[in-house]
Image (cartoon, rainbow, N blue to C red; front, side, top):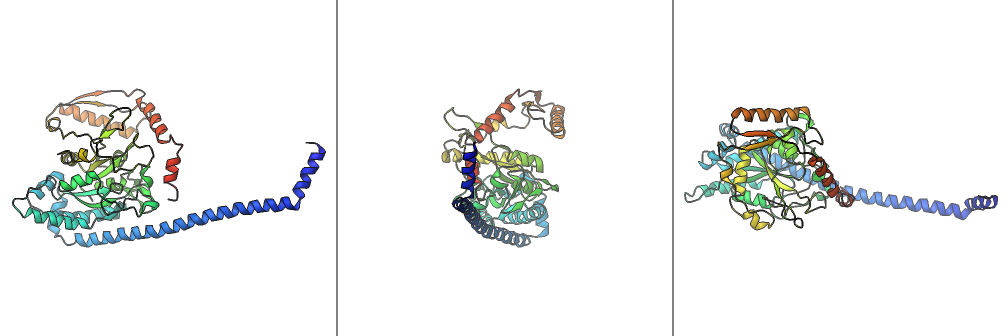
Length: 421
């Protein structure tokens, strides 16, 4: 730059009008930032007040449940608490216990689990009236009891229950009230189950812990210093702590399987069926009412699934869910396949494949040991054929494909969903 140009630039910088312009631009920028901050503060203030209402509602429902649970006798409560799924199912069918007594007992158990783990978001008060209604029907000798008469069911926050919040752990959705039950909840109600509480999730159900700005953090029932897993973390913590005998979670990338493993209960993600390259995958549960944390539907879809203390409970829930074509009638992408009793018989011999590494990310030694121990236990029974197999590069390539799909829009959809949370 020659001397003439340098002098001209220096003179321009010293100009009063240049300085005024710079100051004006800075002031305009600061005003925009302050306006944006003010808008955010206003939104957050509204959210805070709504969160306070949601938390008060939760605490009021828990206090109500604590009082309702106290109205059952100690002997009957201990009897109900000692039963596993099949024993409780049989006791309800034989009328050895009433649906009302069972619901009251599980109110108390759920409150105890919540005090230990912070797993609940709400106790569904209508469940008591629902139990009483079932008991009244059972007095009629012509009444045919459904398969799961009076069995209590806990439900993950994102699995919709009519008239109750479904927040996804997002403050912006704290007033999102479900207009109807999810189809799975509808079906299980028809089979006699009683949804009695809702459970916590992580923000947008996208992590394998369980914490959000509405209801706080849910801990592992075995150690408050550990996570219960996610995103069905509240369900897993509640079930593993003895507060529920079975429940409904949801899973896209491990949201049932991870917390079940972390907390110590059973969980089952339903298998997906690819129809064609041009159609979405289908499952034996409906996915129509399951909104996605990513805007990639129908390439990747969340499916609801059962969680329980023991595998027998999951089998019974699936047997009931697939007892007719209710789900496939509601959702064309739900495959109309009945429960295959012929494939689930005591003494049946299976060929079981296993692996201790997927060839991409090695599992922790403890996880590998559990697989090896399970293999040895099954071999010792002598009733099944077990063989190791390798996934090759499937795990690595699948992982790349999944993440490429999730972020195909550069994360814009997710950023919008998480905006002002």
